[in-house]
Image (cartoon, rainbow, N blue to C red; front, side, top):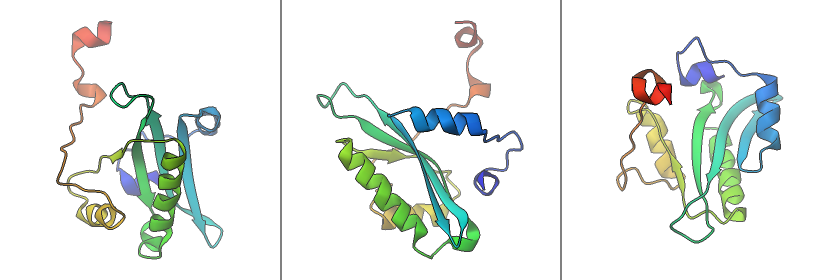
Length: 136
């Protein structure tokens, strides 16, 4: 399923990693199924923040709705569950990044309440980390 999100052959989803995530109270892996098949997933991480007392903020990553299940309401339902999780954790906000070319996904994120025009996201991948940082 993650192959639909990224075309990286090195993507590897391991059961032991999923088990560790399941034990982590600050991380949740949301999964939805339709007709007995997993069709939608998102990873949510709660991040401590110094600005708003003890309120964390949430980062949503690796959102995938399989192409066969798009426009069936599963993505909206998944994000309702994510929002409930974040409300229960008293999050100040939910953030997500999306590849610039995924325009259909951006429209979906806006339909479920995200605003793409108020902030700008930046990413630096490991292959671009400085040599000095790699020695630390």
